[in-house]
Length: 74
Image: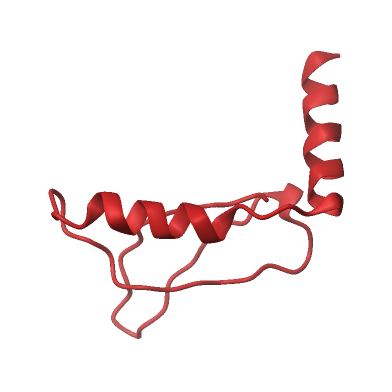
């Protein structure tokens, strides 16, 4: 699964702008949650939760990654 994890500042009007890589296609899923403070004691637990949910088997996605890898090798 392709993933993009960023911490962004929210504008005064409550919006953010994120540039999405072309490899993600025309439709993406957005997950928004409050950012952690640096040194948060729950960093490891939150990372484990995120990673356990972010990476699932997906044949279509695997094909995209394989194409990317093959292009980098060429």
